[in-house]
Amino acid sequence: MLRSLAGLLPPGPASVLVGGRGEQAAVLAARLAAALEGRVRVCSDGGDGGAPWDVVIWARTATAATAATAGHGGEDQADIVIDMHDPDWPVIRRVAAPLAARGPWYLTETRAFFGCRAATWDAKFGDDLPAYAAAIAQAGIAAGGVVIDLGCGTGRALPSLRQAVGPDGSVIAVDVTPEMLSQARPASRRARAALVLADARRLPFATASADAIFAAGLINHLPDAEAGFRELARVTRPGGLLVLFHPAGRAALAARHGRALSADEPLAAGPLRRSTQATGWRLTAYDDAASRFFAVAVRQQSGLGGLSPRGGGQAAASATRGPPSWRSNRWESRSRTR
Ligand SMILES: C[S@@+](CC[C@H](N)C(=O)[O-])C[C@H]1O[C@@H](n2cnc3c(N)ncnc32)[C@H](O)[C@@H]1O
Image (cartoon, rainbow, N blue to C red):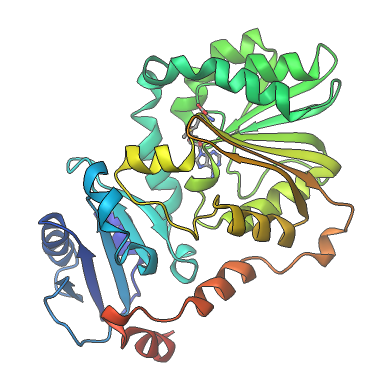
């Protein structure tokens, strides 16, 4: 993780603030400083109040109980969020758009995170299968078409997707983590689904070739959700469906991860409506209940040429957020250095 993190930082001398609650922020700051051998000035929160920061990192450490009452503090405004729930396995959870394109961090982190969880995934989450079946039945995926299970994991949705498209349809299961695809092999055989190792951000499929995309638990793992929706719009035919699902609602999932809900998360109602609309979709269903997250968007007729440029939406969103009071110098410093 430290190597991925180092690759995200600006190449020359830079200043980095590590914020967060508890001791973990200080521990992370010390480890990062050691790994970077003095190239970067690293402080933990409160260590150097008025300095201008090039990069702000947030160490997410709150337990579910404290997150519910503590609000999200500096996490929403940080450039990089590191999930430190498992101190032995810290993982980069979010990177702001201006940094996200740097280095190979995304694939390295994603594969490391999911690769070691693949073998026990079904044992841990197997009880959720009826919820997948119900969501897919409700989504209205038409028989006879091509459906892509994007971020398919161990293939838990494949039987229901095969049932939806029927014997004449095609089911394609895509994941970027090889260990997940290995685990998905038995389910894919039973569902007569093709397995494809690919990144959802650059799919190896022709424009307008899919009738529906099912994505369970994927969008929160993309570094730029809006850019992701744009790529999904490219491969989906006009009138085709995007079905977003998770067998727990946003609040329940945030509590499980020990963080507070944020109104500007990609799957919050407002941001999701805006980002899907900006990328060629129309949101037609949104249900963020305790027991599930379920949203459906329909691919609009408009050509891809009418869509906003790659990454533009998120950059604009972060530009309008404005500086947080606890590190007000930083944005001026950034505009000088980038
Ligand atoms: C939370 S798991 C969900 C797995 C499965 N959909 C399920 O519901 O059981 C997220 C999955 O998305 C995959 N993933 C993450 N980023 C991806 C990307 N950019 N392209 C394709 N798959 C990705 C991970 O490897 C992982 O298998």
